[in-house]
Image (cartoon, rainbow, N blue to C red; front, side):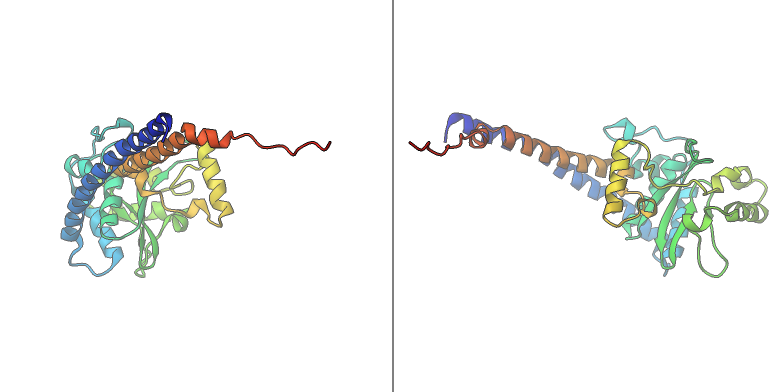
Length: 276
């Protein structure tokens, strides 16, 4: 093998090995976090026999666990916010608490994702809740105000059921009458229970998100109905995915830049001989 080609092979190995090792190490650390979340989930829900009951119990536990001040902790990258474990240890505001609810539910096999509430189509987001799958469909829970939205017949309301109605505000008014005047819910803004413009993903955010949404539609999916991906609310899982993507990109780039590969791609073609 030529020295230049040998060097290219070595670069491929080095480029792939560094992020791969980091991703594997972080994966085991993430699994340890999941084990902690699962133990807590089983302590909360071990005696319950339905997903709706488990979801409500987890929501209630997170509401009462720690405070509601914004959690300024983070893992490696501050922009990704706190991990679920950090929220469990320190509490947090609506997005933080919702992140913890979703993570605990995931640890026991219940699909859940965050939903962001906005007061108008082009307004900023003002509140975050959780939508989870239960035995009857989807249901919304709010760990900031300890709210869920039952129908009275054993079922619960999801975002699609609450959107375009005043059922959210009616539920809050009902809870205000049921709970003491000192309860936190007395200060809950009506806008936090308005789901007309609630979304799991802001698909119009930029070119990338619009392209992903268009691709999903071509594949037969409706992006607006999908739960928010877990990796967007779990910093360690996001970093694992990023490292694996970086590894793949570096391997492909090293392969394409390998002198041996370039020599093959630039091999001259043999033209047909001219007739005499």
